[in-house]
Image 1 (cartoon, rainbow, N blue to C red):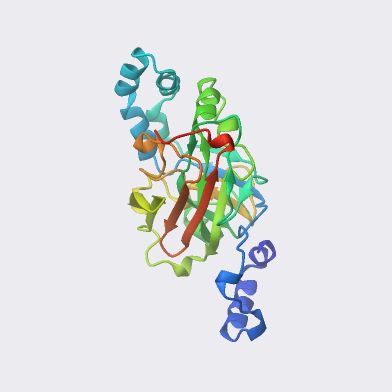
Image 2: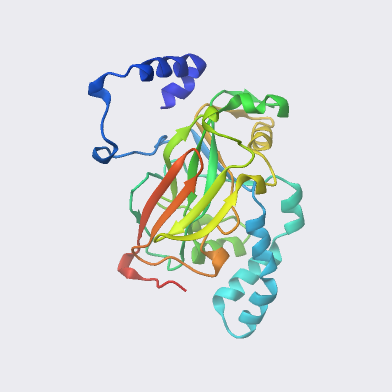
Length: 289
């Protein structure tokens, strides 16, 4: 896939030619195949804050967190400390991101082995753009030309560990940095697959229960704006992945809940498909709250 991305329009043309008359020996029933991550080792990964409603809800809970902290909740006290440190008004004005480990990628249907140091398991429904063309200081009007396609991105989050690191003001740390913490898939869809890229349906389900049903129209910043930001005085490369951040309701913490051992998380993004994983917690540590 990396070679195909680097091959540009000529590689896509050849792929379309092959697919128009594929050799029968190359066709397998999907049930007999195991899908790997479309890019098991991306060139680079960055998770952006293109959706801001998810963070806004966190700030809206500050009064509730203060009451819970006063009643003796250590978890509420930790979340409150983070909220007091962060400037939400700046998040609305500036496209921010954090750097992701490209060695932490997992695939569709792969079990997510939860780190032993965490009891607060969470997922995040995101989608991501895959860069197809090298560039530097890309102007906004040219940004779309650097997009190869889109994939689903599950940003697994150990919330208890994340809060500790964020309270110190150093980012999510071990809360989002463990084996398999970033699931990509089930495929990469090229832009021509989409009905309307400004209004893409995004759904999260846990054990078949729908937890959110939103749309990309709620993005405060666009992928094109992310490309402009990521290429400022630095080069972007084919195979880079920039994720959107979490859609509102697309995580357990948005609902005041957490995942438990054996929970199946399904993330569906229109025109891409469904990304499905089961959480495996060591010692069955956590019950849903």
